[in-house]
Image (cartoon, rainbow, N blue to C red):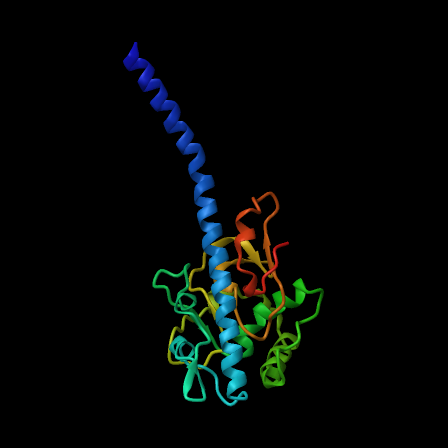
Length: 222
């Protein structure tokens, strides 16, 4: 009888674990996504400082450019923490570098525009205006064929040796957290061109994990 009772308890315990497992997996994924957004926003801020320092004359060509910092007198000013240089969603931890052209940025800009009621957030400074003009022109000249082509089909993964104005994850999985209404990791672009607030947790989800986002990331939870 004792053995039967122990086996019954173990069976109940196993069923309970199976029931809880999906919830735990969801919470783990949510935390990774929020961390990815926090780090991505830090990279975007580092890009802003880098581009403004060189007055728009050049863009960083690798994450190492941001990690090396900027000269400040006889010292070097750090603009990016080493941990933020790692994408927690990508298998190799490398951010995908997003080039400063309409094809790369227009889909995300369109999402930001829709999220903000038809308006794009203003640029942090005038040095970014020339890239903003390219993006706006891309939005205005987008064809029906462009709209019909899935973003993932055009995704080119560049992780070094290319001028970039933003970063994104290499992971193409569907997200739990929505960033500017986008629910796919690879479509989240972190760039100084768009510094509005745009993170939302889907209806019915637990909001407790979202409250742990660092304030410095300039992120809001709807």
